[in-house]
Image (cartoon, rainbow, N blue to C red; front, top):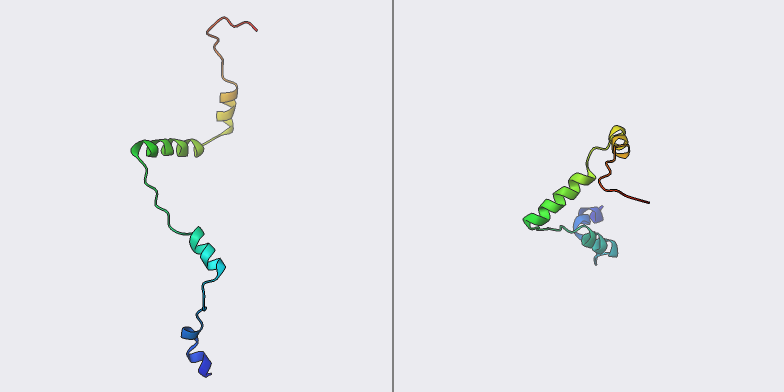
Length: 74
């Protein structure tokens, strides 16, 4: 029972494990600073990827009326 009393102080690992080193490297805090133009572009890309897509919206886009402006010959 004497070993359990000092368990907290003596139970620390002698060296840092590889997993701890990898975890500390992969999950460290990252701070990103952007210019106002970069923020605007980032927000536009975010809004594009998170827009609401419905079946009706896709149908309306695919079957929209096409207006031919020039005389095109194929």
